[in-house]
Length: 217
Ligand SMILES: Nc1ncnc2c1ncn2[C@@H]1O[C@H](COP(=O)(O)OP(=O)(O)OP(=O)(O)O)[C@@H](O)[C@H]1O
Ligand SMILES: [Mg+2]
Image (cartoon, rainbow, N blue to C red; front, side, top):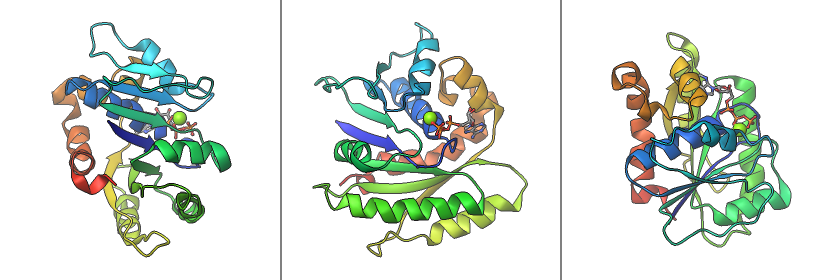
């Protein structure tokens, strides 16, 4: 079983958007997906409630209020973390995670906040027996702005506190497709390909990484 955690202490950076889109992606690939929502706001669970019965099934668990076991049939566990997470709840999620994806908004304030968060997380990492793999993605980047390029450059230089490179995987543009998909309980991979070509292309580097040994402990 593969386990992937969407995490960043900043609110509104795209954790739920990434979690639901990744869940949709794997479901369309025929995988058995469990989406665990650790956020009492329950946005991932709300998304799942909108999902059409005709779409590939995704299992959901309101992890913020119930303990759960991962069935043997599950191929992929996707965890959606709440904003402002720290201490024991963060530690509990990290114990389950093989891979962490950290969405970051294209602003200096958000990038700096993310580096602080990473420093604190390394401390918690020591408690985790297997070393989790972590990567950042830039999210909601407006097209035709310099912010995207500057951000890519900056994020490519980020290092983990142990000196290892902090891989930077993808730039996701700000797109109405994410809003449209979210509204219907779908992922962008389940919208018309002709409308979502750019978005699908932007997911490719992240998906390649996730499907390779490089993202596994
Ligand atoms: N690439 C994108 N393009 C357009 N809208 C986006 C994109 N990513 C996220 N959004 C929108 O931005 C808002 C915040 O995104 P999201 O809920 O995924 O963030 P979050 O990190 O889960 O927030 P929270 O910390 O509150 O859980 C949502 O309304 C979402 O639809
Ligand atoms: Mg969320």
